[in-house]
Image (tube, rainbow, N blue to C red; front, side):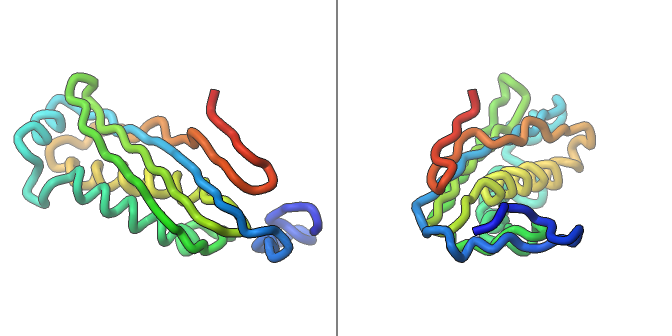
Length: 157
């Protein structure tokens, strides 16, 4: 197998992973949505007219993980075996914290799927609470852990 790169002769391409072994792979990512006092109050009162922002964000994040290959150019479509997505309202910190763990048995990892799940869940929280306040901030979108494949295990320090 050649050097892994998304460019060949200066042009973008999808990396050929056909010679790699299908192994169990997992990735965990997180994101936060910083809330304004108005958004905290809206969540405390049970949500907004569109429904429960946390439940809708959880579903949106799971669906996004499954569609990552369609959303991110040159990202491989993968047979995801599970997505665990948690969306927690932390009123004392004025934020919503999102964590996603995605698993597969494939030739390449699921870091992008975990990150996409968190990003879309955070965007969904924003969308559902923007009527209460436009001052929300999506922060700390980052990979926490990945395992499997040739590069083995990695954990944020």
